Length: 149
Image (cartoon, rainbow, N blue to C red; front, top):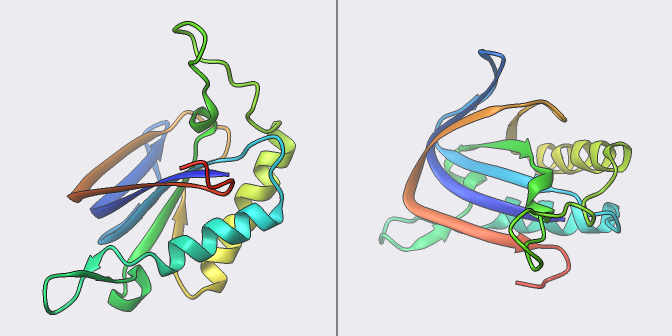
């Protein structure tokens, strides 16, 4: 699994003009599921994100996790994180999971974040979405359950 995690002042996802999820201060998590991913990959990412210390403490250092400040998480499925551009300019999505597996692991991942005590909102799986955000910092972190980066 791969994730792009952005520290935000606020974020919102809409589908056909209707809000699907919206948060104030917290994390926007764009998550992609690969064809070989398992629940262990989702566990790894959920644990990393729940404990990710990218919010400032009293001394101004990035030392606090989202749950410590009462922030929320907005999770948006994004299979394009598995786009491969090593050959040409049109991405191949062959490494992305089939929708059935991707949906199951996406929902499992969200459940894990909620079980960690985080307030979670989501986009809509396999829908065209518009995502609005105000990136705070900006702070953007890339995560991969295979630890390729």
